Image (cartoon, rainbow, N blue to C red; front, side):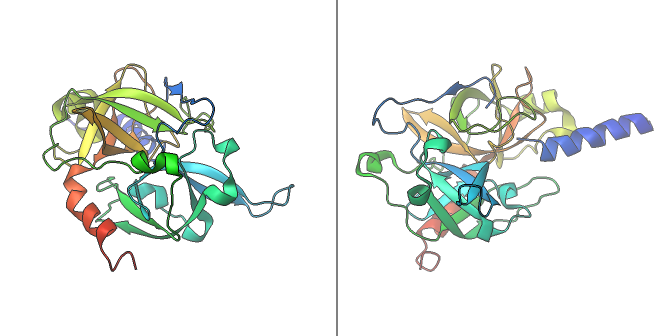
Length: 281
């Protein structure tokens, strides 16, 4: 058996640390709807943390750090790692804005009451999915009601290999770059787990099960700040939220895929939580 030398081990460890914590839209385009047109992704969430209790203008200042997608009036789905070492009292959700700088913070900011996880394992990023409940019900504007919430996939939508999907987020447009106020979208294609393993290698590739998806873009990718945002795949012309941004080796490197938590394996848990009368009381 061949052993790795110390330099090889150090390189692998450094790569793995970056893979987990520097993970994550690179190469995408800014979403812009003129006038009073309804947002393209009205269910999109910016999860923000209190940065300055009172700034120079006498108001609280928040910073975006993760994305999410509203599923109904109370609950949104995101990545579990977004809440790692976070205090809920300092976290809020801004819903349905294509430009965060122009958002009406008083009307758009929602405090988070509680977060649900399902066997999340931060060391190997397994089950990287969370459901967060707002403290008050989200009531969308009249022109948004029809498309205000993300559509969960059907139980039989497990094999998505070759399907093109949209990624959206307020994250950086390059590795270690600044987060964006504008909502940006890009396109990626789902690849097989074997293709993913061939590219990333056995150590960095996700397990060959149904809990994750690998997706690769043509110089388009998710990046820091996009975590928790939706992977939107059209099937029979219906835009389903088939995954959420979990992690990746870096941002926008040609030929390197990112990893998404698949929604289908967690459908039963999601529907039980968001529709349960005890949880919603």
